[in-house]
Length: 364
Image 1 (cartoon, rainbow, N blue to C red):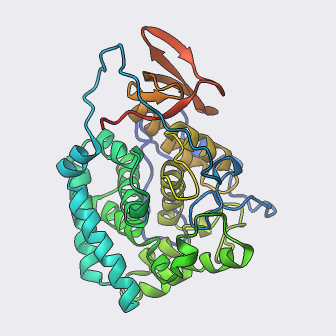
Image 2 (cartoon, one colour):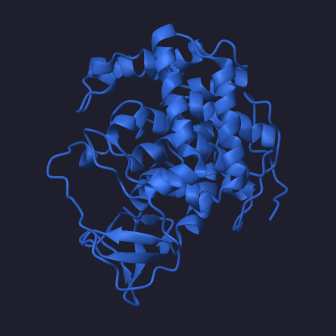
């Protein structure tokens, strides 16, 4: 349903479009009510993104990580389930992954970004998003992937989430292409961060954290051949709506639309990815983290749109529960997405702290 409302976009971007909210419940104006009024800056916890290696305390340690042995479901799954390898091959993800890894290695060695290489990659991903069902893209992002492939996968995953976001907002193909490009480039500055900090299997020290925070500025400085819209998207993806982010401590609509979208994509993928120092969270746990960030660090309206579409994509999909049983996600509460309602053996059960969703179900 198209909503005739104030534009989502203010200063800092070339775009000027209204938003189409799929399955819209409220107008954009009502969602923005009381928001962006220049309230006093609030203190906020460090970003949940892996940009600083500071995730919720419960996920900091990799001690005693539970290895789930999936039990064969006693129900017929209502959807086709592919293996991660099949998904990567059929969507072209494996090719993009190799090309992205090469580009990141080149940046580390040459201290420069090849504009042509990145535009080629962005075009490949944008075209693939057009022809691939969004559920497959999210299956790739939500799948448990090798830790040593994190940086290239993170860049690709954020670019894909950005592309999906662009579709959900009804943006043009050119705008979606540029959103994908920002996703690919947002963390390119990490190629200049010392590997002992970038790959530290623990929480960073205060001094290391300050060095890590420089990656967004490094990204901006590396992208001199790109438009200011792309550069700002990379520079500001760790800024917070309440002004407590970095590197410029800007707030509200001083943060460009591309950066506000990339912030959500960045946080989500960081949560559902495993690292040497943390286990991957389920999509529902990740959404719970994002819910806690809305109105404080993330754009409330964009979070609402993200939730509506993620609910549609995750509904009726197979999930692995904490006891290894495979069930079907039937519903979740936007205010408490961590514990969805799941169908197991014909029974509808609300998950909880003792029986919770471990991950989405992907064939081995």
